[in-house]
Amino acid sequence: MGNEQGITPRAEDFSAWYNDVIMRAELADHSPVRGCMVIRPHGYAIWELMQGALDDRFKQTGHKNAYFPLFIPQSFLAKEAEHVEGFAPQTAVVTQGGGKELEEPLVVRPTSETIIYAMLAKWIQSYRDLPVLLNQWANIVRWEMRTRLFLRTTEFLWQEGHTAHATQQEAEEETQLILRLYRSFMEEWMALPVLTGVKTESEKFAGAVRTYACEGLMQDNKSLQTGTSHYLGQNFAKAFDTQYQTQNGELEYVWSTSWGVSTRLVGGLIMAHSDDVGLVCPPRLAPVQVVIVPIWKSDAERDTVLAVARGMLEQLREAGLRVELDDREGMKPGAKYYEWEGRGVPVRLEVGPRDVKREQAMLARRTGGKTPVPGSGLRRAGEAGRARWPQELLTAALARREENSLRGVTKEQLVELMNGRGGFAYGGYCGDEACEEAIKQETKATIRVLPDEEFRTDPGPSECVWCGKKAVTEAVWARAY
RNA sequence: CGGGGCGUAGCGCAGCCCGGUAGCGCGCCUGCUUUGGGAGCAGGAAGUCGCCGGUUCGAAUCCGGCCGCCCCGACCA
Image (cartoon, rainbow, N blue to C red; front, side):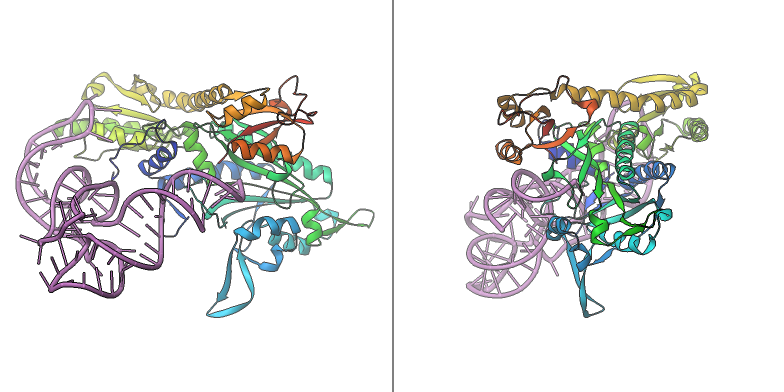
């Protein structure tokens, strides 16, 4: 227990609410080190579930896990011009080791392209060595000025995929494959609908040719970049001299990609679904999917109720659900309900003497509603709930996103919307960075993506929202995390 | 780095203006009674008042300096 304070309502102060939910659900805590968080067991369990699901998908699509060092020689970072410009200001640098000044400072990785390319250059000689499809689960350090639990911390956990291909087309296909993979994970596991598309020059990854991203709308109508997939062209191959010999005996640089999602996803999960009571967690990512709360008065009642409850526990575990029996004594059922609701457990089963008599349990869903289920039908109810609920959360999140998306915005609407209630604003863009920058100055909104075809408005806009010149593309604006 | 707020028991806070035995709520421990939406009673443990210095007979309180954290902005996943 520990945290009996109420949660600040979303409407009152969204960021206070966000922190309160994290504390109440015991997902993470501030650490003694500025900007760094401690991920507590319940939060880490969510991350592990995410890792498991993603890792399966990476492996199904032919990727293999590896691990590269935390330290990167400072000179490596400098080999790709845009890359160093983008990342150098954010790095932590080790200058001493074993009490002695190092000959060359070591950067704590802000991302691993450089050290991975240095190794790929050794491993790749022939077209027969391609493609190389690697992933690593690692921690990363980026010295951010301002941090927020899960969303932006100095050190964070992520996965970074790095692939090298013989052809441009294959690399581009890989970038798209991963973008789709991320999107389906976010929708199916996190119940988070995301827009996909290309980033503008100013928003792309330092060193990439193009960056694709997933963007999800949070409950405060700000957008969260939940994943990125970069087409790197031959930029890093050239910087690290990663060449291979073609079938015709010619030397060519490899074409590569990199892509990642991080513990930020946990923050996105929180902000997408949770309410003023605490965490709401889609069942697939819930460390505890069902909690059984037994209720009794006398010792005799306790014995019978607990026996029945243990049977239910067994039954549901056999059905593959993550279930806990909360048999703590000296704590009233109501107190347990509050605790588990705060932690985001999707389903609670209450079993008391009355239920034992009727051979049933009361099933209460985290998002509301309480119904009796027969003891014999628990397993079926559990499975049905597990399948149906994420769909309901996704549908609700999708509806919320669409309600807060405005298509074909005028300049006035864009300014009003971005300085007001927020959301996604679709409009024409001339492609001139001056317009992008002006909009950012005026509204703090940035182009989240140039949306993929599926998300585009039909017919598309013909004029730039800002300057009125001919639009070269449609863009989606939002304030972002 | 700029603006705001805050450092007093594990957590949340009061006390500071006006210096004089460090307090409240929650949590924790023990016991008894409780248990269908945050239990009650009784007893108990727990704090060098962020740090350093100054003023004073005496500092949580007044003065000076420093440090840390949180929130808002600029930077970013």
